[in-house]
Length: 195
Image (cartoon, rainbow, N blue to C red; front, side, top):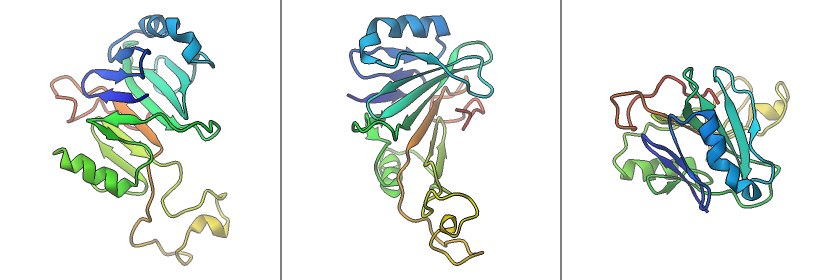
């Protein structure tokens, strides 16, 4: 059971769920998912995503999936995030045969570079490489404590930033349709981080 991100095309959901291509209308997406209601126990729900004409969300094992539309009402991006309230193992999310969730960020970067992608080093818990945007919910090396508490400052002395990020893994993936004239690995439509 793997979710496959398809550069320039869209997303292939785990079988028997369908492939959802970039450019689909909301009606078309709902029609493709409707026969599989038994695999989506919480159903397909409307959700709000700033800057999107429509957005739909549904749950798969261990992850939440959000689909977002552009200003022409067409599917333009897919965001997949770990669902901390779901104790099932997270559904793998594949990109060029590499699972993007759950692996240490430095290992993931090495694997993407081994595929010939000019992936930058992650900074402050994020990695941007068109058409991907990967992030973790809280900054690496920092516990998820409330702001202002001494625990939220992490392992460094107050007022000092750590020289290197501690080990972390990504838990949110945004995948966008490439702009026209690109091959799906360069440029985006300027929507990183909208979901």
